[in-house]
Image (cartoon, rainbow, N blue to C red):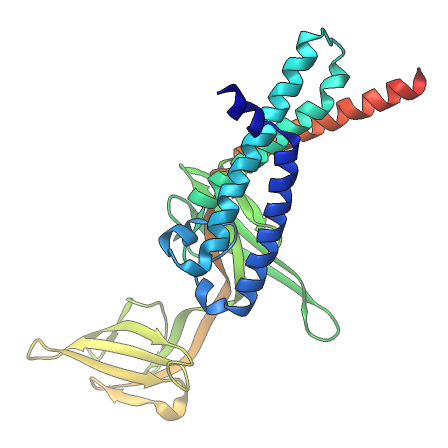
Length: 321
């Protein structure tokens, strides 16, 4: 048992595994570059993809996974051995433990990557506009959208001002491409995918009346209740088209597809109906990312920061003495 322990805490093993990890990362990058069709659906740090799609072409990853586990065990045992040795010889100066603290942060980083890779996932994109939209336990709506562009027309700054509601509490935040909304100490991220103007309703002219409607709203046309069943936007149709439904005398539902514009007006149920305009509101396309490893990331930052401070104090102390 002691022999196995000595092997796993060997610095030579750490060096060999470190080179192996580097080589496998290079090989994996080349394979993914030349065989992109084999990695459709892989995103971010999600490594569960490789276990859900077991293929010989992913052998490099399985070897990399084993190498990283060995690397983590080696780093942990080397750090533990270093601390035990210093404690045995009576080292009491805390700055002398700085390197060991940094190594602890490195081990925690590997664990955080493992948890994030296995258990993090991203929900499909959802459109959010001026009404509350459920994002899975969290509701959000857009209150304003500000954009600026470079002289060539490329977007410069995109800021969506949003209101978030969770567990009965509401708060305002700003959403951007590099500025996600963070919840649950960062474990829940709302990421912006796209932005623009979203159709929120239609303007219908019924005889001499102007009706501003949303989908599923109803209006009266010569005594008949007509429902705005749907709104179709390009590229579904060449032009925006609204779908109207009403119950006929034989209790069968009648459907009418009405394109936008006065020239496309139709006589329906004894009334002249025109699809006059579309009401648009600022909106964003977002996806929710769940990453349970974020708390460990904060722990990693603490250990790295504390370790580096101790190392600096040790260097300063040597210089002064």
